[in-house]
Image (cartoon, rainbow, N blue to C red; front, side, top):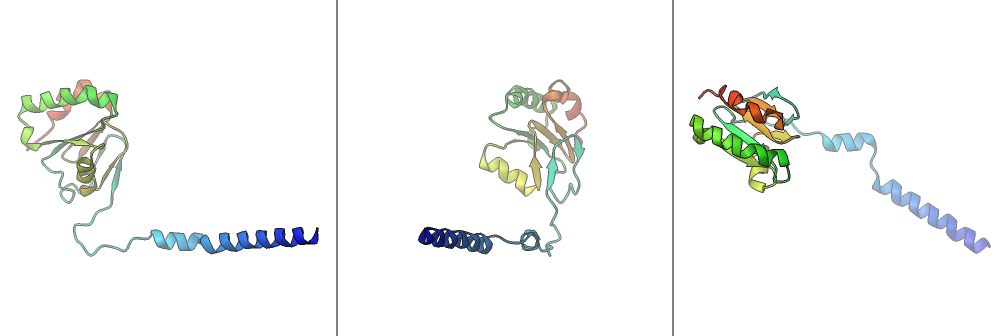
Length: 150
């Protein structure tokens, strides 16, 4: 009986030491998360696009004069909207400013990362510095695209 108690106490002590050595305090975790300010004058913070919105620092993000249509291969609304948007792009002569960005492909994720954008919902249409989120705009894409100025 004494031998069993000795092993139980030893095992509990071992696990407590293991947990204590592996965990960090909240202060240490916060310090790890801090990002040093960038000396790069082109540095900007990432923006989460989750609703219709104006996107700040447009020129730094290189969004001026661009039309991005962000979709996912798993999104049924995107599959429905993509041909509508691309037809309108061709009709309005905006093909040179247009880019289809698929979040399911690495290349598409790289485009968004380069612009410092995190897209929460698809489809999202970005014209210059304005984001239009959601399939609710499928009937209004022509009107939205008419706001594009070169």
